[in-house]
Structures are given as structure tokens and as C-alpha cells.
Length: 93
Image (tube, rainbow, N blue to C red; front, side, top):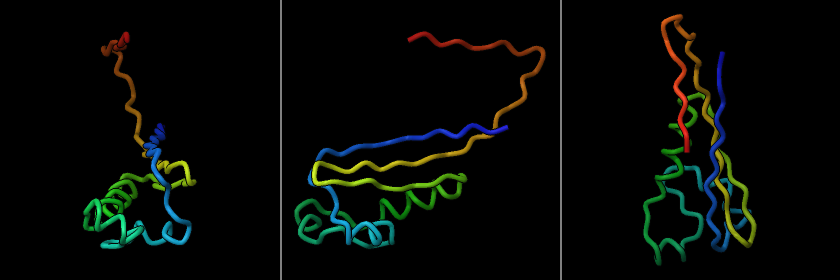
């Protein structure tokens, strides 16, 4: 038995141009060189993130618009069988 969790991180900035979407997950690729010069970065973060998510059996993708960008990823976790002696743990907010 497995459990798939979906995470989403949204940035309400200027979004990512469509032609840059395909390359932003490549090592050392930059989405927009003018932004890189202003904000820095090596172009490794998304490539590393994508690889880690894939190693855990998940997927990483992006949705973008001029109003911002949302990065999504899923990770699949195996569920443990409950032992007769285990008790349920309930967490209250």
C-alpha cells in the first residue's frame, strides 16, 4: 500500500515565459538571464529538486502565468502495516 502526497509552492511574481519552461529543469540553465543577473543563482536548484523527487518515485512540474508560478511535486510513500501493539497517534491543531 502506498500514499501519494502532492505539494505545491506558489510565487506571485511575474511568472516564467513559456519558452523557458522546458529548460529550467536542466542543470545550469537559467529561465531569464536578466533576472539571474539581478537575483543571482547558478541554475542548479530545480535540476537537483527534480532529480530528488524522481528518486523518491514522484514527479515535479510547473504551472505558470503572468500572475505567478506554481511548482508542484508528488512523492509516493509506502505505508507500514499496523502492529497489533501499536496505538493510533492523533494530532490536534
